[in-house]
Length: 112
Image (cartoon, helix red, strand yellow):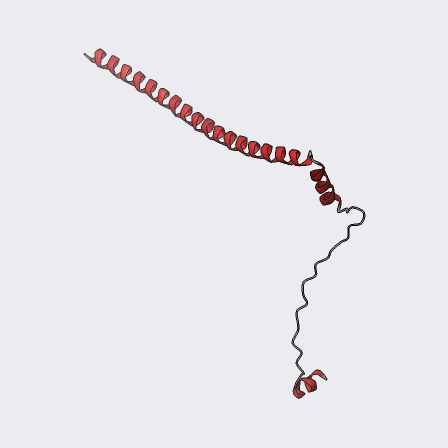
C-alpha cells in the first residue's frame, strides 16, 4: 500500500513538472507571437508610408517630364529668370506711427 502511494506521488510529481514545462513553452511561444505580430504591424505601416512616398515621387517625375515642370524646378532650385523678366518685390505698407509731442516734464526729465 505504501509503495502504491509512493508511485502515485512520483507520477503526480512528474505530471506536474511536465505540465509546468509545457506551460512555460506555451508562455514563450505566446511572447514570440506577440513580437511577431507587432513587427508585422510595423512592417505594414512602413510599407504604406513607402507606397505613399512612391506615389509622390511618381507625381514629381511626371511633372519633371514636361518642359514647364523642368522650368519650374530650375527656377525654384536656382532662383533664375528668363531674359526680359523682371523681379517684383512686394513690400508691406508702412505702419503709421503716431507722433505726439512730449510734455514739458518729459522734456525736462530727458535732460537727466
